[in-house]
Amino acid sequence: MYEFLIVGSGLFGAVFAHQAKQQNKRCLVIEKRSHLGGNVYCEKVEGINVHKYGAHIFHTNNKEVWDFVNNLVPFNRYTNSPIANYHGKLYNLPFNMNTFYQMWGVTTPEAAKAKIEEQKAEAVAKMKAESVTEPRNLEEQGLCLVGKDIFEKLIKEYTEKQWGRTCNELPAFIIKRLPVRLVFDNNYFNDAYQGIPIGGYNKLIDALLRNIDCKTNTDFFNSEYRDWRKYAKQLVYTGPLDEYFDFRYGKLDWRTVSFKTRIEDTPNYQGNAVVNYTSHEVPYTRIIEHKHFEMFGSAVYDCQKTVISEEYSTEYTEGKEPYYPVNDEKNNRLAQKYRELADKEVNVIFGGRLAEYKYYDMAPVVEKVISMF
Ligand SMILES: Cc1cc2nc3c(=O)[nH]c(=O)nc-3n(C[C@H](O)[C@H](O)[C@H](O)COP(=O)(O)OP(=O)(O)OC[C@H]3O[C@@H](n4cnc5c(N)ncnc54)[C@H](O)[C@@H]3O)c2cc1C
Image (tube, rainbow, N blue to C red):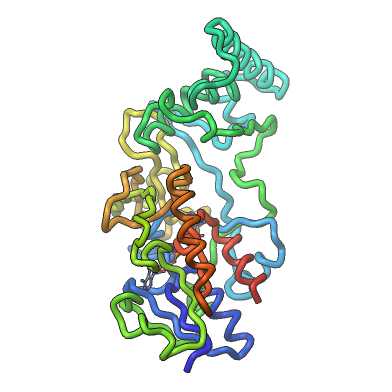
């Protein structure tokens, strides 16, 4: 008899199992995929850790979380500093003095600020002329927040590719703030700590699940574990919330991304882990070059090949990976109905992005599980 049967070996399930083990509670982890680790799993190709389910960068301000993961496996110094490619011209992200220099040739924060304010004022004046007081859609919102050049070159078409709709049709609330930095700082995250586990995320998962019973290729719903009370006192469920209740009220919607991954016969394809393609000219939104997460400086050239993934925003249909919850009114209401059912389940813990129908970065998942213990 186990204390916990844990459905899903993603970060939530793995941290839970690890913490339970520290308290001498026996766990069995079952995973329907052929490997452990959920979406942080990496596949080794040409000696490079390929982030199979999308690029994952660990970042946090929480020292306890950072120490927790670093005690399991040391993290490297990777700093996310994406580049945007708009019709072949490159810009640094997030929007900062480097971007403004590339955009307008301005060299001082004062000159950059003046340019942005001038373009914001133009957008507001245009709306006023049409007797519009509040932005009616994402396009107007973006123009009011950062002005024409930044919006049109770095946001508009990228957002349209992501959503499959024009910015005119998208609601303004999708973009609440668009921070601009008047300093030369390409570090995407504001957090105190960020990095990638040295040797890849599988090392982190291996460390979390060391000496814990795990079974892959085991789907909770199509295995003897459906009758979990025979095996454990408590269930930790990290699969989709609606599926647990057999889609009783209908299916929750998801957004997804598809990846075209290939090996390139060059040691260095784009010189950066993340390059966003912000025009409609190319159909994908980003290219990830995986080696740059873990290989720095001359080490990039020690490995003669490289692996890149083109990312495409695609509609979610049956069989695709459910990546991002759709936080519109219909889905929020539906998820709430399922949560009410979940609250009534006895000895069942629902956790993680699928079971809570909530987008979580990795660090908050770790933080949440640590706090549960
Ligand atoms: C494209 C993408 C990019 C991301 N990038 C970042 C990033 O850069 N930084 C960051 O901090 N976070 C990032 N995240 C978030 C990160 O992936 C999540 O925080 C993390 O994966 C959550 O872990 P989880 O255990 O809740 O879910 P998952 O990793 O999805 O694990 C759930 C597991 O349950 C298994 N499962 C489901 N149903 C069953 C069943 N019936 N039986 C058995 N097993 C089942 C699944 O196969 C899966 O392995 C990203 C997410 C996505 C989608």
